[in-house]
Length: 296
Image (cartoon, rainbow, N blue to C red; front, top):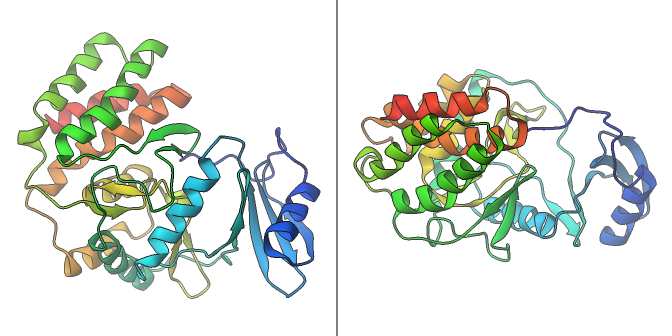
């Protein structure tokens, strides 16, 4: 959810380990091109391809990410980097050549995102095929427990567990927690019309929205699951996205949002804000309470 700075040389295997993992998982000769962070290395294969090699020690994290990338790609909508191999700790995917955001690409991204959501999921909270129930969103745990009713599922499996942690760490005060709890109690009446489970990216902040040289969007680092489609859109707004107005216009052309969706943005932002409050403290707890107040 929140990226570590490029060039971070914190704990983790060295770049040679990433090249060795790429060779083992792709069956090609591999050489380090550059190390981007403690977890991410750019590697050149002997067939001319350049791939990204990611390392993660958290059990299930790589499996969840690989399954999520494949599930999103299977919809044939938004472009997703191909998975070239993975094991319990290493993931090898396409490298996305950098480009510049533009309004036309943003409009197309909105249309493609609407089609991705419409590809659907078996249930709210359903993990991708082959993905574990215990997954990750950034450095935080994410439990994909299926449910049939979105308001109840969202409160029980997303907001309230992180609210309790935020209170325990002091990131949210008891009075603020009461505001969030009240919104969760009234969520069935606040959530808008019932929607079928959408196929969500699940961690759709700006850092996971890459623009290629053609001006088209490619999505990386998903926390994919079945959820409410307004959740992805609310996260785009929370952490910023170039040409967001054009993204939303394209989305509305393909799958118009239910009346009142803009008033529900705060509800859908509660979960990522509480995750940030637990991980980073600061003002994220206060932002979560403020979002709850706007929703209620």
